[in-house]
Length: 188
Image 1 (spheres, helix red, strand yellow):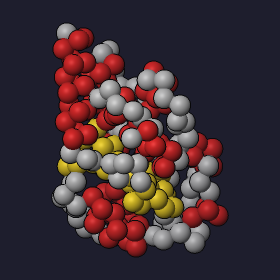
Image 2 (cartoon, one colour):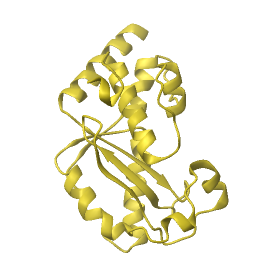
Image 3 (tube, rainbow, N blue to C red):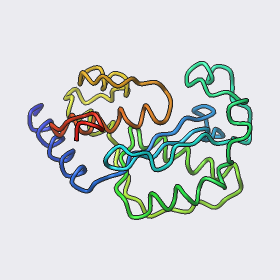
């Protein structure tokens, strides 16, 4: 069972890569139902940043969250708000395969950020896939692994920095590793 699941994960990783996906990661004000995005990065298939921005939330960033990602209220004070960032994000995502490590979380934060700004959710027509779920099949224990753990298990040199750009690069590298391809953006 382990090798069939792993072989399937390898093939799905290759199929996703053949579609030249973009990669997305967010940092947020927390994990709850009213939290929202404070940083977003979207990388093109080759690792080039298409969106990489701080985002001013409607609420303060709790100190316990600042300790994780290092993004402070001061850092986002002059950043654009979600309604200002969304049109560019929607354009970049429209019609694309989008690789996300823990897709359920980031997609939920996007809809919550819409709600916090009284925007109706606008599906950009993307096809999101979860790299974390795929990695669980690849790793073979049926358990989800943190991005940091996946990077370590794959012996990827990129850090899990809890910042959107670094984490998006690491998620991309994990997908490349599963497919048996070079993991660094400049290795291609």
